[in-house]
Image (cartoon, rainbow, N blue to C red; front, top):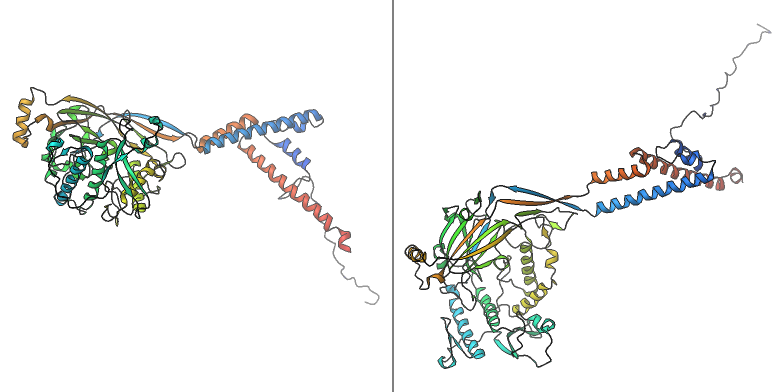
Length: 586
């Protein structure tokens, strides 16, 4: 209609502007505006004792300063104690646990040797030639005649020298000592190289010369004692001859156990062939190991005493052996674990003929076994796999096994051949001066370096973590007695063909048994574990602040807030300096 005004819809009401957040509202992430506000909030709300005193005494600056200094000193003392606790933990201390038990024990392995090397038929001619050269050498040095029976003949009784094929290398010589003012024996440099103290009554020594490959460096291996010099010189040549044998040693006539072991009983029961194994030692002859890991079954001892152990009757007669190499008679015995080699030089001792030797055993120093903690707690090895020395023995890792293997590896590396007394690795050959003319020079030099640990074998070979040893104590008695020998020797003659004229010099008796079945096991355990460390840390925190683990979280939160406020303040200052409105309008 004309004149009527049409009302057009206008715009709706404008939406209300968002209200700024009030003080009661909280954002998802909120930081304090200043350090004062942060510390005020922390001191009013923390559960740490003493912190609230910093706020309550803010109107008294002296009290505030006192509580601040006290709080900081307490904080420092607590963390000093923390440092001591961590230092103790990372020193990895151990506690020794001792357990006493009594039970049946596995009888150890026992190795017995004839104490005399044997003349192999394959090298008998070479050994006879060595004896003839030695006979001539002894006459040249000492003016007496030595025959095969071992008798010493004066000069008038000697015959002309036998025809020799050719002289041996490294002849034995008499060396004159230069005249000089004699120093005390303890400080004598020459006596350090000798195997015996210096003999002041003589102006000469006995030895033999050794040179390197091109003869540019030589030295004399000398001895003050002529007996030791002859034995070592003979031993050196014997090793060279013995190394020429084939890999598989020939069967020996003396290898039959009945020729060496007359009787064998364990726990009053006779031994069987499955209870022992045989091997030949270059220096100690035929050896028999009883109750080794290769035995049909291991012996167990359920009762102590001499009647509940191993009893052997041994033949100690010397027949067709080498008197220049072995100057003693009897037998040699050692006790070891089933899975350990028999080190006759290191742990063995001799049995005297005509004597009954009774050896009582206790497991390791008062009957004990030691189990060490490995890893960070001690420098021991579980099985030798982490030791930088290859185990050349078919046995478990021991420190002796490692040291001998280390020396053999050094021999092969530096001398080019293997020493015959130690196992030979695959691809190596034993030392023989027909093939390795300078191996003697290298060996004696290497032996000196080994004794001074210049080879590093003693530092490389760590202790095993688990060790079981046997403490031995021996008793001796004449055997058989004067009255008993009237029937013992006839029985041995009929049953074992025992026909020696001096009967007591050719037989010995050995008894090995457990003195007691009580044994002590020493084991190590960590003195400070992670649980102990956390407990000690909590105790220190409660002592100095009387708070809990949640208080530690509060301290962490305070540190995070301090870092955040510092970054925000730096960002605000940079923004006001470089991005101000006046600067942006230009």
